[in-house]
Length: 207
Image 1 (spheres, one colour):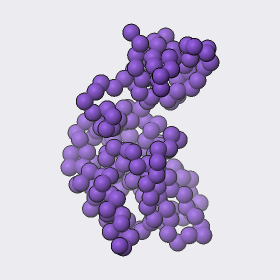
Image 2 (image 1 turned 60 degrees about the vertical axis):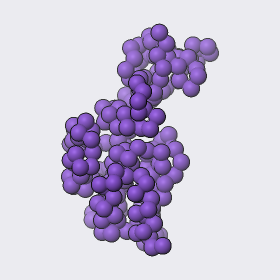
Image 3 (image 1 turned 180 degrees about the vertical axis):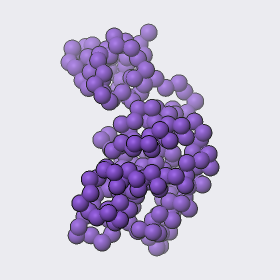
């Protein structure tokens, strides 16, 4: 099986069907090695330029929903295209990467590729893309509605709660404290210990 056939086989399982041809087209312009990985809490995908390699590697978490997978795929491919076009000494998420990412996203910013409710946060995100889409709270909350675990059930995020609210996370009871950028300082009720928890953590409110 050729590299392109192998890639297509993976992408057909992970992307919205309408986006597969475009994703392959980007690979054909600048080939790379592609792998899916287990869940990584610190990142959704990864690209690192290696001077000693002709073919670079992109990895993406396998558990992402199709729309998050597509966005992450374009995000990482934009790194490769930016390094090829502008040189390897550019900042990873500087203006060159941002402009490349924006250009690669333009052809798929329609309801052919994304549900209409994702287009508003996507367009807002693309005005000044962050180093990780997971840092964009509005976009990630909308994206997470399409996670397999979220379908047909009401999802409550830590960011939706008020300070002082108590909630369950991984079977442990916490009380919400002050928000610090993308995380919230919360106190575990049983131990009194404090933890920084992501605003996008899915929690169960204790009435």
